[in-house]
Image (cartoon, rainbow, N blue to C red; front, side, top):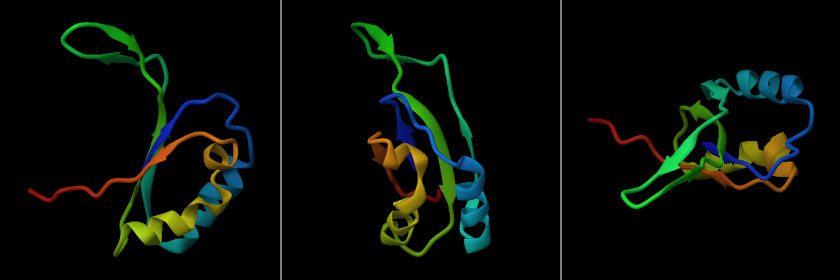
Length: 86
């Protein structure tokens, strides 16, 4: 799960993380800052402000965990992708 900026992701992160740990699906994550977004022609501000990793059977399982996510509740964009096992 990537959490994109929009600013103002306030909320009870401690309670949310404790709830995720209790599900047994949470595998860690981190806040991110001071990134840049690059392509061949330009660079700009990175909008990814944090990530979380989960182990679940489906993306729908992870979507269900967004109900109390402070970034999601603040209107920030969330991206969920599967990790490709190589």
